[in-house]
Length: 308
Ligand code: GZL
Picture (cartoon, protein in one colour):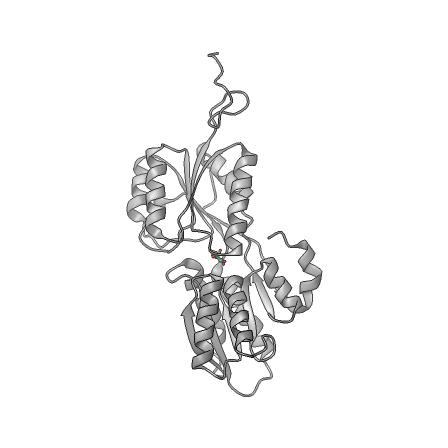
């Protein structure tokens, strides 16, 4: 056998060339995203892959540029969590032409051409929205008056924002007692969530429920509610999605009623799929994350188990 290359970043301990995985991450907008990034990075290291990681700061043009760079670098597999659902066909056709398999993680895309990616791993966001809506319908089953809802939406055009909205509103708005009095994007961030909730509270004196598409916006909204002299959990009850530690603490503190879990810790499963793609082995078209719903009475017991 030829001389063994020194074990640099591109080669493993016995000189074999490492699998190179190019990954374009949405950004670093939320606690969920930070946990997802850590899971991807830790799992790539554990798998012995060379990870080329790019943070797109929630801009699609940055993700497209990163994917083009990965193509030029002739990586073995490309992965990304698409910030929005549309506008990917051109760059994915370039990856396909270069013979580089693509895996979608976390968020899905809208495309007519299903050959542009090999597999998707992530959550069913419609189910998450429906679960949030189901909690509200059950919680208000004996309510007689109108229930006014404000909705802090995720990033406009993103799969989680589109699908969580659909699941929640299909479940809730068929009941005439529920009124959606305000809905606007908070872009999944705390800062924007606080800013938009402040505006909601100025415009509406009668909000009963806040549905936040993620915990970071819910935490920002809690600050806005308290700065307006109102009590979260009493004047305005909050239903949120993700399941980060801060949201569990907020439930322990009685400020959030229920959190629908969205699992960011998919790194190990992603790397299993990446290995299979490199080896041209069969992969399922879709791998769905398993996740639960946690009401505030369960929060104290569950908090020590939370990994993100
Ligand atoms: C959901 C993920 C969303 C999270 C947000 O899988 O795409 O993006 O709910 C994150 O916290 O910003």
